[in-house]
Length: 326
Ligand SMILES: Cc1ncc(COP(=O)(O)O)c(C=O)c1O
Image (cartoon, rainbow, N blue to C red; front, side, top):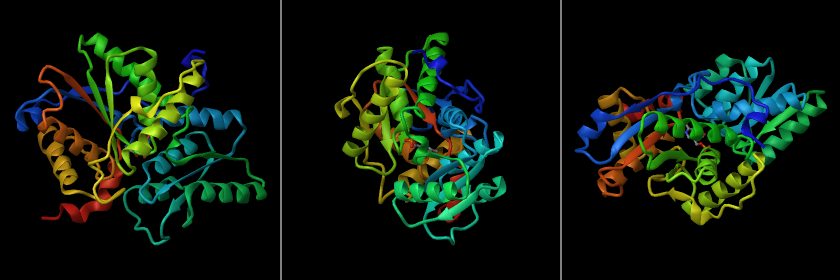
């Protein structure tokens, strides 16, 4: 089956631009040519990678006759914020289940969730359980809920990044630029899985490097392989991905998910001060810190081209103001 035959709603501004990071490259003293794919500019409620996944997930929810989208995440979940925005675009309700204290400051994504009018709940339970409880409650109230797992990272959700990789490969062809490596922040794995699915199915000579923001690299590589296996099934292909085929680096996570590292803060400042590009401390800042470190180690050849995918997350920065105080 062709991806164009899979039901999809339109939410994102596509194709997202690709820009060359010449000043950043100069500042770090050379290395491979660096490009950035601006998926922070996907457009829905401050943008980010989840919009692409939601185009497929919301289409499925509508197909199932849902009236409410439920999803879960950390208190500063970008995915939850964009799910609320996508629900609004289709006249659906959104219930966001957060893992944390009710007292989360009304800042960053939490503030946007409030502005978007989403219902929020705080449950100190593993996400699958919290989602199930919420689904049952809503059903008892006569609602028709559709559950989107954390990060929208299902085979169907990752179709958004199948399209993104196709878009990027087309950009490479149009600009006669070979893409040797793609670097992306990887959390629940669906973004990396979609990219990897295309690299395999189109036999592209591209290495996708997922910079883990939380998980151990072996665990995340397994997860990405599982989602990529599901992803190709959606387009009628059969391939069982093995974790050996997936490149994940976990040495830039630092103390844990959503906990800043000095390298991440420096990467955020560097991108902002050389290119005017805003990264976030939870995802893209850590991924950029990883990319800069690999460049420093000489991991890439000087004549290679590296594309960093800016997956968004900008609202999260506002919840970390104290780390940037002088
Ligand atoms: C800004 C940002 N970048 C990257 C990711 C990671 O994407 P995935 O969960 O598909 O691995 C997320 C996920 O929440 C995100 O919000």
